[in-house]
Length: 81
Length: 143
Image 1 (cartoon, rainbow over the protein chains, first blue to last red):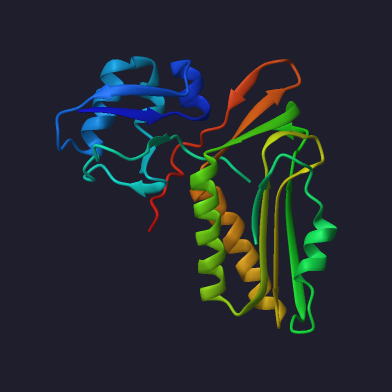
Image 2 (tube, chains in turn red, blue):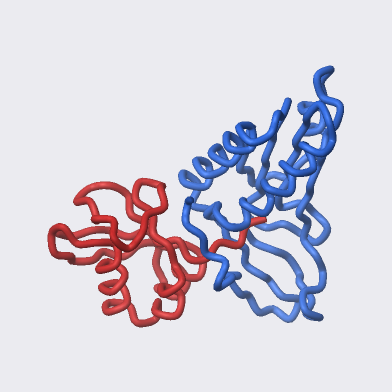
């Protein structure tokens, strides 16, 4: 399946774009998505090992299954305030 | 009340909204752009958010604070875009019958906001360099 991952802040800057699209096996987990993202975009590696992911604007963990539809976002360590 | 805005934050307005005959204490926290960080000079801070999720997370913070403490008002405003030196990027106003709850809720709100809400700051250093701030080791899940 093909999914689109939104990128923000340092991740957006490192990749040079707002979102990237990835090919994942059906039923892939967020952990697999993270690995694939690193494989496809080595420049993101330093941030990705510390980043969280969100599905439909909710934090999820590595075991969460990636849905075929829905908004997926990479959330690098936050620094608001 | 929560708010993400590109405009300057007006704390007086927020305080007016929080004051009521039920409140005996109103606490205001402002996070402002500081000139020096580790001896290096900042020209300006630039903030970016994942707006849909930041709104959701801020609403959750407000809800959780109101569950944890008997608040009569809870307002959180975060500014996005460029925030010049001395100006506020974030304002938190909490009101309660007595001060201890308002202080505790205010402290919890800003600490948790900084750990959880998908907003990022970029340092625009006075020497012209820019740098996204991604504090490693402060990552928390939504638990």
